[in-house]
Image (cartoon, rainbow, N blue to C red; front, top):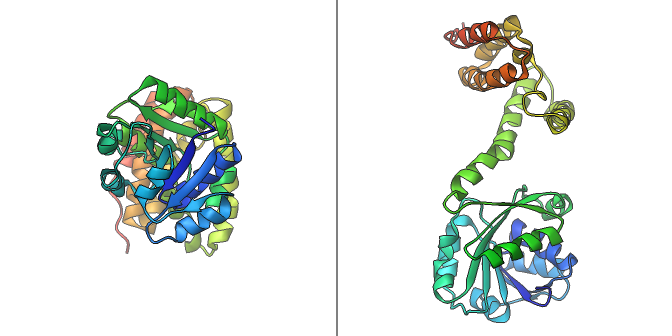
Length: 294
């Protein structure tokens, strides 16, 4: 496999990160194309020996292993527009898109698969540093190619999880809870801190170490045992004060707090620090109607 020529169609953050990772792992990253061209130029500057070509078809013609690192909605369209051959290995890097989006490549005789790193790809330099230890969701119809994808992941320092056929959308949606959804929750917390005069940086400086402690607690034990807070302790009065404060801040904040708190109750029960009777009191507090401002 190291002798195969890798080509990238689409040169955004995912493509640029993986191209550098595979190049550093000893693979021949030979060619790239991106719509608009700027991403390919950046990739050429980052990967020694890479050529930028004039079309997606040119990349396929020049390479054996072709990575489609385009937007999810463009995968099928791009794949359908290329004449593939039996020697091609064609892989997309979408979490939610079924590998059937590569049906044209398969019908042309190519081998197809999916390779989705569980990583935030906003800045390629940051993503590249964080890649070792990341889990990659892999899928392939052919067992031998699935093993190839696992080996590729291992060569860039990653581990793998097999995504069953037809499960990519729910798999991908689930990881949003600790990706984009987490950032949305962090943004909610920052907005509350701003209401009492803290800056965004003040809030992040305080909250991110708390996050690190939270993940460490879960890593060293389990979801239930790693959870602290007023629900886990059974502090009904604190929950009631939280509800009143969040309702006062905004109806949406109160609604979100109620929804999230409800989901911590089973963990508190599993942790055995919350009794069934106190859990019922917390649920009753959560069911109270918001108090209108003014």
